[in-house]
Image 1 (spheres, rainbow, N blue to C red):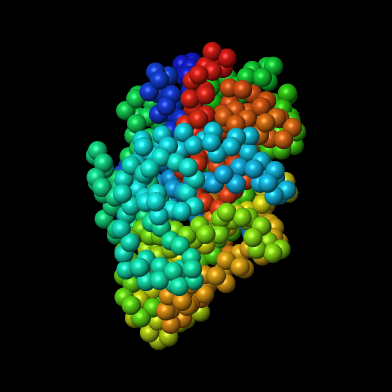
Image 2 (cartoon, rainbow, N blue to C red):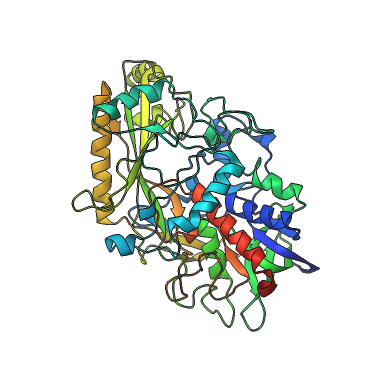
Length: 526
């Protein structure tokens, strides 16, 4: 391999083109900064997306393998993406906000970690993002929703499956509302409205779903940001004093190694890879990696414990229609994280997810115990009468759940990432309560049979958490490394606690806050 020094310095170097990275890039480029995005995966265009499970697999993680351990693994391959737009290309667009009680769990409950900000500080960024990206929902029906501006678009409609399952929630005295979605319910600009074909997991070729290919990544390119695909960043480079980043080292698909100079470096390579990059960026002043002078790098790794409830109903549910994320939401179990004895956490239900006959999250795979004629009889009925919903729980941040480096190396000679995650017994207890409630709801809705699958990890957070000081966190509230101010970290790795909602909306709000702080403090960074 040869080393090529690139003499042209850029203002902002962004690692990763997903929701966080593309928003940082777009914000900086619109402000007149010279921006370069380095994306490890291949280029993807909206026209490349195909509604098939074969294609859906192509959107998932395809980089260096991550060694996983623990009794509740994070699921890197499913939860992460690879290529233009990152994981946000295959995300389902479910965009609830964190609640006020997610930001101060240590102060309020004596469990977990407090954020260095409160909901009120993040609210303006939530409001601005939903107006800019376009969210659909019914604020009045969301009785649990924190104080917020109304949605800019009306809610997506509830279809057969949602109406059938909603009867069970009502019978149990529980409440439902349309899911808040970063999906168009009406045409907006060049993006058409959703056609409810249920292929969100394979991307959205119509542009109805707000993934970076049609939102922030497109905006960044329009503002003259440059994107280089198939470029793997190997480490962040520092000056001799170790107090300022000078750029990054990366390699292209031919194995050639480059030095790219930059005034500011933004790490937005998603949770595990951001931590891995910081571990790999060792320096004489930071011998254990960047952001790790207090042994906090990689700690407090989190994933949402999730359970799926399945059932068969007498009514035709048209399970193939709708959206992968579901049609309705219930957050009746959110307000008090200690409501269930011997447990901890909030939880939510995402109800009436679109299901295809087979493959990931499909109808047939819900009954892996059936074969031959039994499976055929089941599919004959379930293909029209199937119903499903997903329950998502809080996680408790633990210092022992951590991203570190493996002794093994990838084909580029870089140490692999290791991700260890165990579930806290109090959270496991909450999942038991949630599953019991879900099965009761399906029974009340008239399911002739209902069942659940194994607990799985949904979303990946923590590892590069934000906080008030270097002694309690890796980054400050804007995502700046405490140790090196011109290095920003973006994405759900910043979360000190997980909440029990899908993280992408919060990721974008934090990224907007961080990007604007970067611009406002430019004279101190460059």
